[in-house]
Image (tube, rainbow, N blue to C red):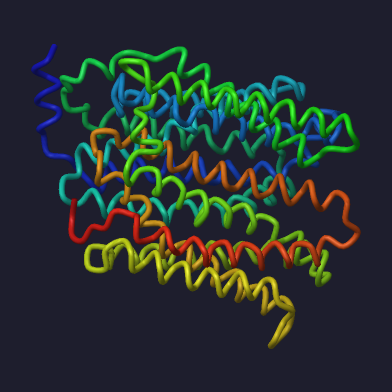
Length: 463
């Protein structure tokens, strides 16, 4: 049984074909993360439910995605990147079909969580496949991930609006089925088998560690949801209780992984030398900003009276800038190293955040906000390739888990930002002014956080 695997691992890899398959999966996941929001009203009417239950289809997806990210990274290291990538594709596709067929909101919510569990496996396994099989070109291909996600974020709402207006909300889910099946069969055909591994410790599953981390993430997510929607003392007590469970579970998890022989996540990947600062930079530089930018449409409408269509296109400007600058940064990364794009991208993002905070100094409010959002997107696009590679070069053998931790860091920063701002806005009569202060405060935080860049491991050339 070992000979075929060895031959598959050493056979020439069709890099462009394999990357195209991976890119299709990442794009499908990215589109799905935004497309459902446009169909919430149609789902509510179609399933004869409340808007609160309908919105749980988005919350359930977030829960499943965040909870499964580190688990999928561990599964990829235990069972192989290719095998988990194929299984994730099948789970995502079948769950999408089930979502389209669902005849009640409760079933839809459960299936959305399963769909997210499948989607959570794409980034860790895709990163691992590239690190394993793309040789000296792996840094550039991994960096290209940053140009895929903005495309999905831009076209998802467009597709969703088209399906709702001219077809059915069920097509929002059905559209994934033919794409998912194509990815599934192409992956079986072209993605090479994992190289053989002699690391037997990675074959064990640390069940107590998984349970503790899962409990911490789930409690934290629920606490964030309660914080964003709380009303009165009961809501505050619920938030504090869930937050306490999340913190205690995390502390027990960190204690556990230091003492067990085969931890779910190696402690050094979380807070070890270089890894800790990389995770922190991902939270502050990307996670906080992603969360704040999701509130730009609300800001544009409440502060300047821009209609829903106009406010939504502001995110398109951000996404386009992120895609363009990410591609440019990929081409220059081996020459610039990691520190220069982090400084330049941060400076551009800070200017964009300040622009969002200030009243229009030139042109119309829409033009001013679009330009500011473009700058924020350009800054984020510039830093993304460096931050995707910064941790991977230190431990390529743990690439799947490191990719999961990066995405988890982004999600943590984004969820925390949105929840805290939403909780504060719930008691304010003028959300526009509050959001302006939010962007100003984030600009200051980002400026102070520049001190962290010098601690990010530097690298020039391929790794």
